[in-house]
Figure (cartoon, rainbow, N blue to C red):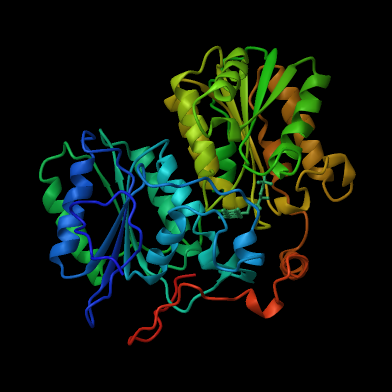
Length: 473
Ligand SMILES: Cc1cc2nc3c(=O)[nH]c(=O)nc-3n(C[C@H](O)[C@H](O)[C@H](O)COP(=O)(O)O)c2cc1C
């Protein structure tokens, strides 16, 4: 085991997670998405590291902009082939182990479109293996089952240059969704501008409360039923200018032809073409690194009037790689003047997409573009690259929604609320979904040579003296 590193002097890529912990000491993981030492936000992360060190806890810090962190490929092999472990060999394994063994995880990020930075979101996406593939009935909606008996408390810190109530509200909603899905026993949030007076005192107070597990946020078990409908509403004063060219950004990192996002993007593109709009498809995978492919993707997008972001829901938000692409597009929007969202979630209830849709709206506004509204569906895995036309009965409502949306978008209008409602209609009852999903994981596991009773493996389990901690789900 390597010697412990001081958290206030971050190791960009620790080769291991925690050193041996003195009996009774707590473990804190700091996921630091500030950029570098020249970043004015870095002082907040450094201060947190000092507070964590001086609390007597054993601290592990990952500087996410410096570690090796590939995007999630969305293949679910961390559930079915190597249960609990991601197959991509980079720092995500160390982060997952440190996460699972921590008592408190502090996530510090600049606010991007009301949510996390692409690097923090990628780190969260890669944590999928810490939960169990099976679904259960949560309070009002479907949830995953826990893989482990205990999970860490979470403290989310969003850094902003100036206070923005809308971004803060969205950040808290993301944190709440993540806290439920990542089974946190309790969670805290803090939106902070390091230009504000006495920010150090505020940070210290909240850190102390988070470490003691007091004054946490209430779990949003009952998010407002109309939250998705509100996020899907187009800007009320969207200028009615007709769309001639649309670019559809496929936000899934799955191979071409295999994602639900691509099925939906192609379904909408077909209907837009019928309305005389020319269309082009671009994949987020082209944004992984600078170069010719990224330039070509940006050129295609910049030629269009309308950008449709067709993306899966990953850990309650947009995938890290999709955020990375959006960040580049916001910097170079070209001729784009409006954005629409086309999301799909794994859970059968479309309402899970609400924060991701609100984040797309935030992206549009931050980039100076109009928000033309959104469509979101649940149980997205039914498509997985298949054309919508192969399921005309099951997806009748969703196909009608795409038709209505295409007509409105081509005519320069926002997506009508009736189309968003039709898209969100459940395509199968939640109990049937849970049963079908269980069968799918068993079959996938068998195909990959994994014994069925290994699906619940706990590779990061830590022997502890304390009893299990209650989970928040
Ligand atoms: C890393 C990861 C995180 C996910 N998180 C969520 C989630 O929080 N809520 C949800 O409903 N589905 C979640 N899903 C399921 C995807 O949304 C679902 O599989 C979707 O249909 C994939 O679409 P795609 O084929 O376009 O990638 C997650 C999937 C992955 C790979």
